[in-house]
Image 1 (cartoon, rainbow, N blue to C red):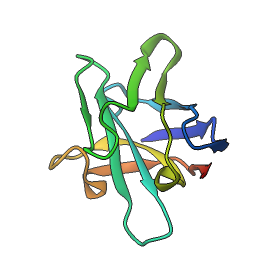
Image 2: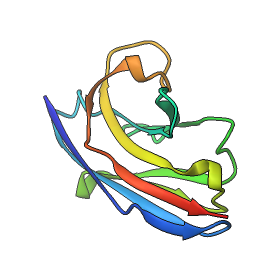
Image 3: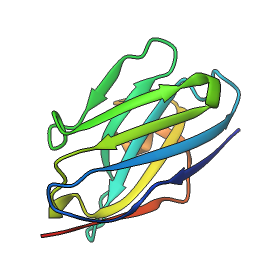
Image 4: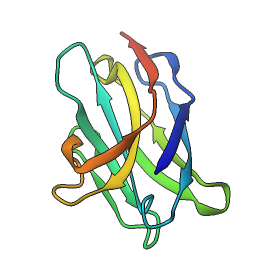
Length: 124
């Protein structure tokens, strides 16, 4: 079992920055991989970034490489998503996920546990 809660969403102008936080609890084996996803107006939930809380290894979607940075603070049981150079197409509800069960690390089907999400709106 794991529990997740995101915070830090809001509205920003294009080119601006936001930092999202995801506070998590649960067995360390369950929360080893912490991922960020987003869902815009369409039906698909897109994988954005993932961090291995043990090794610090990260993986990013091509659409956010060079602009977003995922990091973790294990002492605080918190994962962050620093988002810079935001674009209107980054507008979405952002979700934190964990409980990796195999497969691709940016595939929503690979995760068992989800937070409620935090909305991000980027105005042009």
